[in-house]
Image (cartoon, rainbow, N blue to C red; front, side, top):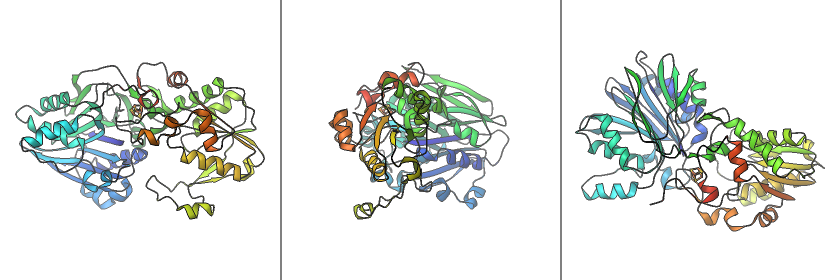
Length: 448
Ligand code: SF4
């Protein structure tokens, strides 16, 4: 998955710091590569590399990159080849009508088919990115106006996407017809900004205006903002955004991420209220809000059970087995004063491979917890995602192999309960459309 941001300014001549801080707020959506591109009177200057926003975009670069339109990107990648720096975005290309830069969060399921057909006709591709296929399709339709070229290019692709394209005089933002990926529009001093999550607007002092609707393509230029095209299909926002991916202070399709997690915690208790415990603790960070909700519904006091080292990102190299056996606790450390001799309810957002929760339960028991009752604020993940969230293959998803009772035993929990799909959906608001594919195996877009 990735995070994207973009701004078009009629007045400002130096918008890159705004994108920098916007990307900084979206860093949780991807820590493998970062980059931004700025339009400077028709010339596109850009910087991108592997690393965090802070590492890739220096103060000097930011000072150099002047211009009134900018887009940026942060990327998460689990696979080795995706960690190649050639796959960092924005993608900047030159084509018959000039230069354009493009950023994309998502996964185009038919991109290999399109790419192979274009390669047969002589096209050359430099990256493994599906983004490049969209750029190549836009270039292919160069005889049309850019707006029409983008509409035509997007009518050929299927999958999940939130994207922004920038040229010398406009920015175009688009969201896939099901709205699987989030994309919001904000305003800052009269200028329009777009971002994967509304927390990016707060970070730069802007305000949320509305979401880009599923299937909508918007044009932002010196005339303002207008809808260029609209092709909505059944709304299917990735429900995992609300469970884990998005920041709790974001609002996605009108839903507060914080409130969804809080409600999920409450429902988690109400679905299985008979548990007797002394305290409720949350697994940092994304289990905390649900744990607070669980505590409120149950009346069992919430307490901090573990302290997380704030300086470790997802790129952290895991300690060796030997170091682990020596009790090295680099990411999380139990707060013995709170948990010793207590019966705990441990709330987490999800279980993927099962390794982290197993380690956490063992760590809490070693620290003196009398019982650990694990409560998960999402249903069992039984299917892999091919729509832009890097989940492991099915055989590596522990819930696709083990029943809940077997899993409880495997992770060493005294009991284990997952919220129901209905519970999660009602916590997220009424079901006006979510993708729940990783819980149900039913996806809004078919695999190719
Ligand atoms: S399959 Fe799961 S992770 Fe993938 S888009 Fe759907 S809900 Fe999100």
